[in-house]
Image 1 (cartoon, rainbow, N blue to C red):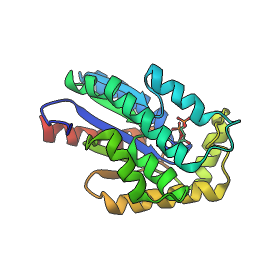
Image 2: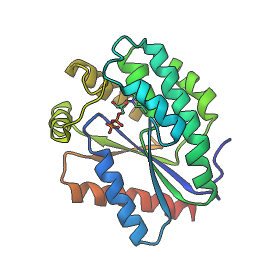
Image 3: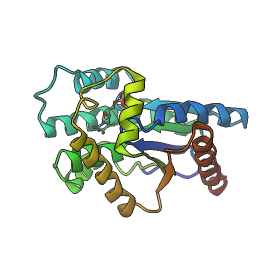
Image 4: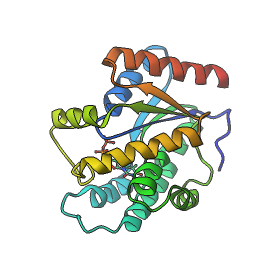
Length: 214
Ligand code: TYD
């Protein structure tokens, strides 16, 4: 199920909670559409009816006693459903798919921060994604403090947002490991900067990927 290069372009956004991925995605969609590209925004966990139901189980604040491996399996299940129902059909229509989180979130959150192991969670996800990897991943880099401030501004929280600072620090460390593991695919965006600067940097990266595949 490897994505063929004559299909659409699959871009994922990653980062700690509060990094600003959703705002950036909205801004990117706007700019790409202005440039005439057919684009869809979607998010994980969720993004399709069945995947959204799994999302509700995963993020419900009262599900505090969820086992780490159960969590990893549910994220992978949600990912599979979303890939088949949303991402692959859009790519076949030659669209640009902007996906808010993908497999790297599982590697950083479940693999590293929950101590299951990055390699173990990678193996588990291979069953779900079957080599279907993004052409490019943008990692929005912010400090844990900035992420926390932005989360507070956002107001609503979920089960994972409520984790202690140490957990969010570990997520951040997990991403640092992934940057070293996948240097070609993952590009760092300095998301401490203002909204417009972040947008311009991310847009340049995507336009470069597009130019390589046109
Ligand atoms: P969401 O409200 O979508 O947060 P955000 O806007 O920051 O993406 O909640 C998603 C939460 O799920 C977030 O805390 C990250 C976590 N998550 C994982 O732990 N593993 C995963 O594989 C994915 C996709 C998300």
